[in-house]
Image 1 (cartoon, rainbow, N blue to C red):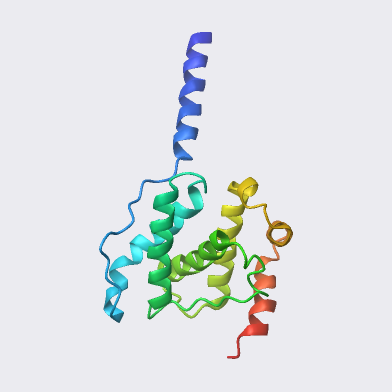
Image 2: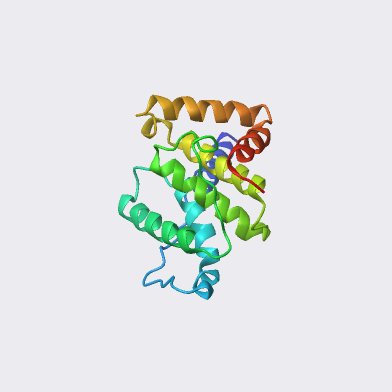
Length: 178
């Protein structure tokens, strides 16, 4: 009976560990993002890229992470449909390139998945959720800046209290004129 319990426990642990391994994804090679119609074929790659960036520890696969950053930045900066708003009020962790790019990626992923390209509130909330997730998984590697740590701790608290959307609504209103 003990042996059966031990095997069962090992199987459960193995499944849990395996399920937390970042999904394998490859950065598109030789992509061309010149015309408006060039972007939509890469939508699924953008979603997978964001998931990969959030779920892969910052100190692993650093060369691939650099390539993923380049791809995602190229896609976001030229996408004819996704418009990400970035301001210090909305994104108080501005000085962390990793968190900032994941914010923009999370917003883009939300827009792609929902088709709500003009939903600034939903996009910003999704971007902050992605940044919080990256931060929580990599705190020790993202704690060089006291202001980033303080900002992220505040965002984590707001999320726990269910007030992240309220934070977004207040700070988007400061930066966007409808």
